[in-house]
Image (cartoon, rainbow, N blue to C red):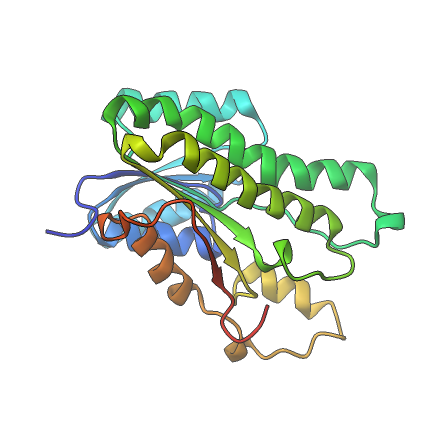
Length: 243
């Protein structure tokens, strides 16, 4: 039997990049995957790809910074499947400005999406995981939480918050058969990364020097599998060769 046969998983930021990779790989191993993303067309396309391979997926247009929208989406999933087994908090927003030049709206958007969005998703699924006494939560943080890049203040603050939030949450639920961990992620070859570095002539890293999505996905899926049951509250560096 596949590791995730009939497990119900939510993957945020699943319209492309790492989130889409996580979702496809979970579905290939038997999970029913709820694909969350801001752009309905993107998550619908990933749903079609999964279904074309014989997998099961549902697409939801969800902005994780909207707590009411998050609650409604979780309620719909639970009404259909009566449980949520896995949550991968992958949705993210990033921009880069020196502190003195950071617009207030941009600071708020990075905190709201990266940190508050993680909290909203956890808060919505946690009662169901506590009821069923089973759950796997993986929060995708960033190397920026511990390696200090100029211009990354808002993003680093949010992702460091995710790491600490993960640690506290673990202390609250670790005796309830719920695993909570985080990944501190290095530069990964995704569409968003290629777009960002393509506009920055100072960045000379080659695509094959970066982490590849399938490499990260193997780590993520291990951490939300029962094989990783002893791992709780960990913040795991997944940097590859570059931060």
